[in-house]
Length: 312
Ligand code: SF4
Ligand code: SF4
Image (cartoon, rainbow, N blue to C red):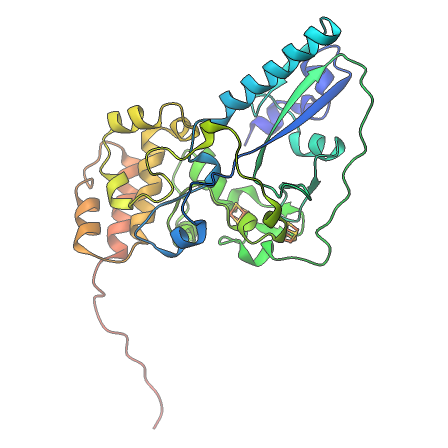
């Protein structure tokens, strides 16, 4: 997460990022895939892999960037040329705060943006522009006395309302984190092998969430309900071929395998699970080997029964 420091004040002053910027147009795009199998059912079946619902279709970066570029193009045809820069997760922009200031929603206690009419399952994108547009009113907050997301977090990453310890968050641990997944969090990951939605799944405002309208967010390769053993059997070239064009492609085969190994360590013990793990005990990657050996240890038979002593 050193990019936070690296980009310094550019994060809070978009004009330093794109000189001449006077306004930021914030845009949201719903991604919930209506064709996906029920999220809770997958989380409860630990032989299956759970992937964050935003990642089941094509990579949102490209979809959103194209949509924003089209919007800017339409605007310039109507009003004439103007300066702009499109941002989708690609530049050091405080997109949630900008979205809140633009009236798109409020930042909930889980630290995601929530809209009264769209819940929180949406991507954010921005157009930085030199157009002196009128400014919208910021959105008001509506978490009220609810605090459902705090205890719902498997790793207790929401340390207090509006405070996320990203180092504990499964999204960070399974996606941005390049090294080992700390042993203390491996059990809590359960079958979540790419991101996590738990804090959003319990949020009452998501009854207003909208299904994705864009066809690129439809589920690909059965990623809404894959078996862990099947995913772990993918070769690197199968991963490359199937995940190209998906946000998952960005983590690469090694991190992908690391995450699935943890999921398999948490799966119900079976000959199939141990065989899948054993097949990659000699994996070329030391990172994967270490996670495989942790996972196999979870399925090892207990060496001696626990004995409870009590006074007569
Ligand atoms: S995404 Fe998951 S791990 Fe991260 S804060 Fe939400 S519930 Fe916790
Ligand atoms: S679950 Fe409750 S507290 Fe958490 S973000 Fe949603 S409304 Fe706010």
